[in-house]
Image (tube, rainbow, N blue to C red):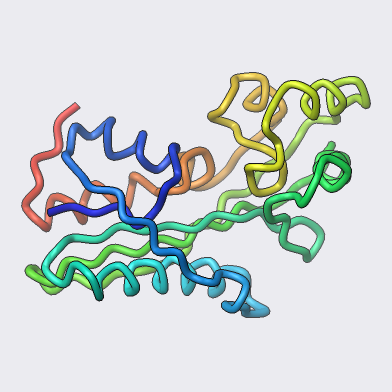
Length: 193
């Protein structure tokens, strides 16, 4: 059995694209209780905590989990509390270089695979106008995403990116496919387009 320890629609899209049957079991952990000064370590440990929590309920299943947040000027941009907070985040990102941290954990007790890491994707935003930011706040559910931004929700957001270096799907979907596919193959899953 393959379990995704996340309710993220973007992470679900990854597994659906791989044509794999899977079950969704959200971990429901207190992410705020997991804090490290090293953002890479923090993202990895949150993903690991999610996978470990679900593995307590499904000890024989293959479990995949992830956690993504954005680091900008030494601070973490999590989900905004309200539209004012979202506006401030979008302004901060305008024309800026930032890092998206995606923690990833893969547990397969049958094949003795216990893997976790963090991939970092460097993202450079183009300069956003005040009208663009206002439009995003009115049209999109910006308070549901880390950094008030989702490049896969609507192509308009993808057009805000001037440059990207690193894990594409780690940034766009919260799961690094370049790491996930080889692990799934080691577990015996048949990956087909």
